[in-house]
Length: 147
Length: 141
Image (cartoon, rainbow over all chains, first blue to last red; front, side, top):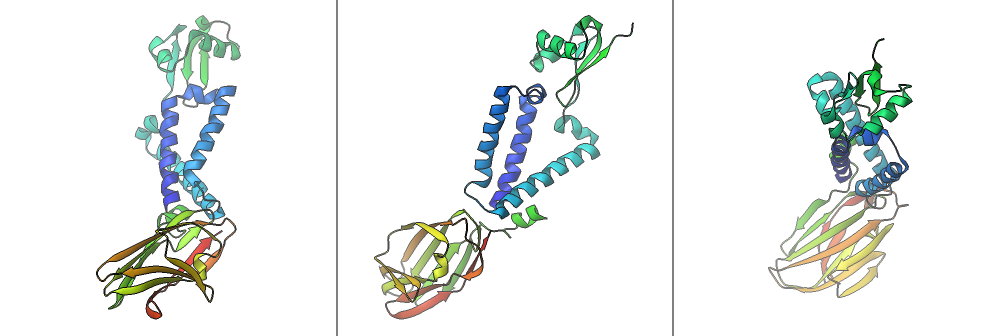
């Protein structure tokens, strides 16, 4: 009983944490982020299973998290009004070659970060960008201006 | 299905209460009846004397110790012994109207698996049998 309750609490805590941390940090796994993720996973494991070495305990944790994940995904699909809360919304970072400062600052994106992402999409200058959007996945997508 | 069953304590850990009373004494055991390998848990025995118990003794089935690590017993009993494989804890004198609360801390050994293993608890006053609580424990792998 307790292990299922702990799984539910930890699931929603991690869900909230990922929303707070921000999509950008989660989409780009730098070496430090990777190590942090492993440390986080280890800390979570302690709180979930504690001294439970049983297969039954593992089944309970895994199935509880799976059920919650499917439920959240189903809610996201069925209730459009919940989508901004559960999944976030795409954020416009560049509009007509100009950086939308307020949005960039909120997502902690510097001009260099945006320019780097543009170069990775084979765009030489931000002046050529009509829209740059930070997607809910954490990826920056670009739409070039029509010549 | 598994999470729902787990929330209804089918896979254990949450303690349950069993009580038996006679004219001489009342015994309550508060401990889980379903556990899993590795779990730490507590068993609480409350003996309430309805008349003077000169030499109260708790007698536990071997199922209490089988595949379990007994971490601590508080307060320490006056004596411990074995009686045909059963564990005997001498609590001593309990005056009428008073209670004796015994705590035992256990950890389930990771290799321990059991299905309805007897964990009966008997209360004696010296050589006189006063009451028995019948219970079992299931240890999930």
